[in-house]
Image 1 (tube, rainbow, N blue to C red):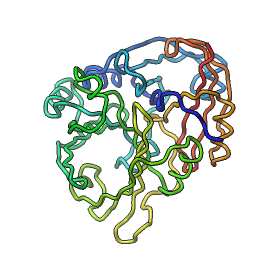
Image 2: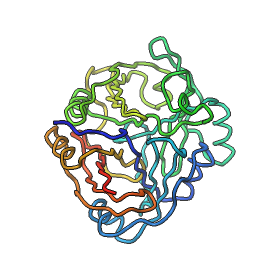
Image 3: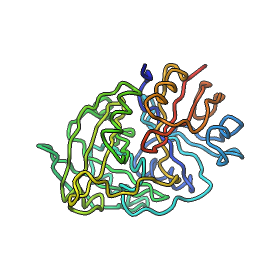
Image 4: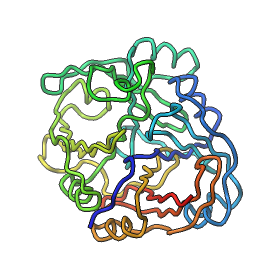
Amino acid sequence: MTARLLGGIDHVCIGASDLEATTRFFVEGLGLWLLADGLIGGSGYLALWGTALRQPRRARLIGHPGAPGGRLRIVEAALPPPPSTTLIDLGIFDVDFMTTDLDALCRRIRHVGFPLWTDPRAYQVGTIEIREVVAEAPDGLRSALIQDTGSPSALRAWPELGVSEATITAVGVDDLERGLTFYRAAFGLAPMRVFEICNRDLNAVLRIPASVTLRVGLLDMAPARLELIQVIDGGEPRQDIREQQRPPRAGFQGNAYRVAALDEALAACLAAGATLLAGPVDLPADILHPASRRAALLADPVGTAFELMEERG
């Protein structure tokens, strides 16, 4: 039995200690839309997310009107995140966006007052040249902005968009095979591609040693994609250079997956090796979701949190 997804990655969950600044980055900087804004709270959210929501918190939904999924759910976090020095020392460590004009987008981000973590840089993946920059939002959040080269993305379906919805959620894993095995067993997803990148230019973008190789598994969770990345030290092949456990932090918290039947999806994920963190709980309709739903919070075998939700209304 596998969990039946309805639309793959429905939204990416983000905690922000400065909600206004984080909103400005995604709306004024990247050109996404503020779709909903208001307070959420109550016993359901308290049971699901714990003490962070003992009092109602302001929450916002950011994306593109009409885009099916790949949106951002931003909730006020009580505390700022601990500092990080590279993209690779977190669970979910960045959310990538495609753009039709990378240079114009960089100028826009700088104009509204946010720094670029790197300068635009080109690198090769096989025969494809990729040009990207990493922008830094508040709380140390980072987003890779990638020049659209004609690969499948929201920009193909909505050519009027200058920036796609969240196209790729990148997750650091300790063991790529174990991560791929989980997503295959839990959701029936075979990887689109599994490949290795050892590229000095890309490593400079990520601020990791030149000797490091990235092992990547790309999963299609339309309309977005999930990218599992294992970091390997070139001096000791197959050895992960990161710590085995990553502390919880504000910032990118996890993906939320919309499923056809929560009980079946939960059973499939637990059988595949996930850990139940909270729930299931019933949540009423609110400013983020027009329908009531049941939800559960889990962690995959490498410790990255994710949410399953079933709409009930």
